Length: 281
Length: 290
Image (cartoon, rainbow over all chains, first blue to last red; front, side):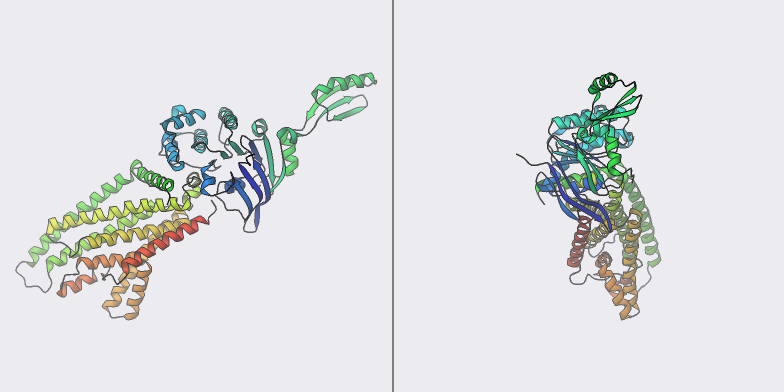
């Protein structure tokens, strides 16, 4: 069986006396969409930058398809969109993609450029200069740029920060398409609802450490049915929506008066806030 | 450098050239250079005309025609070096730290091209343009001088190549500065270094003229530490290396930096210096977190 596309093991990074990452382990498999969550300064961007060779780790290992991160083979296998990025404003969208095709050695030509621009719904903007585009359009162009050469690993750092709801939907659909194509995606985002919606796996980082990881459903934990009765509020942990009629029937049969029923489930936001201790960077 | 890396390097050089064309940088340089050469042509015409009238029938210990030709062509060389240095600095401005801070660099260096190839490509692009520029302007100034005064330097191509190599060294120093300094600091530092190099050359000539061994040594050491000045002085010297008598002695002092023959190994040292500076820039860049 093939190994993970991205393998992070015991990763450490120090900036002077400040530890940005203090022993993080993480794996992203082919076709898996992993959401990386954490407060500002938690080390998410540092981890992503180490994975694409922009930052040198202080310790630990990061491999892309079994090759050390930052090596030419590892770089050839990935696409990256930084949180802070800028493209030469005088280039048109098609020219920018052509430039990156030449950097990657992609032979996709015009067909690849058209397909990528269509994927991010910029098909009509191929001849538009970057400097004439809105921030949201530039962000979508940045995603198209990251996809040049059909990378096996996609590293996206806050790719929807400048997008409106329509733009976010476009990116969501694009990421789902990448998953179908077997691309491994590591997504840094502050948008918990988005991560919850599209990611197969979530990793929460705080203070440079991985504090929680799992599927969004698994992390969200057991639900509960809360019933307000004549004798007080009773919580039935682990019960789901479908259990509510039975619980109510049993309470009534037992002579309780039922005034209100609420089905609760802990959201990813609850899990996140619990994991990071309500901290913000 | 592997085939794919070479292809990527060509793409990066091509992008720089395309930017120069699209941003009308080259057009501005072309127009200003045409202005400079027109002004130079006018100055050369009247300088030769007036000197020829002034010297007609007078027995002089100086050769006024050679003196005028060498002086104004020396001025053209100085201006050409300065314009080439400006071009070299601006073409390498913010290549590392500046572009990293603005987010332009990261999308490129995560590609297989790698940092060293990217840096060398940017350097090669800057050198091709700025060194090519000084050679063309130098030759144009020569053609104007020849046309207006029928004066030609003793050596034509040697000074041109000295200027080109000098500008390449300035580009290398600017590239190194870009790995650690912000854009503004980089521009200021490189132009100050450029000025310091030329001043060192003048100091050496003053030391030579007043027979101050210490001053001459200080100036020479400084100009070898910044060899673009040594190359410029060698280029100036090559203009008049065959001119003898008092005219030759006076011209050696020159108004725009003294001329001095290229010592043994100057060219080899200049190349080694340039490669060492680029290698150091690549090393610093390779250690830098982006």
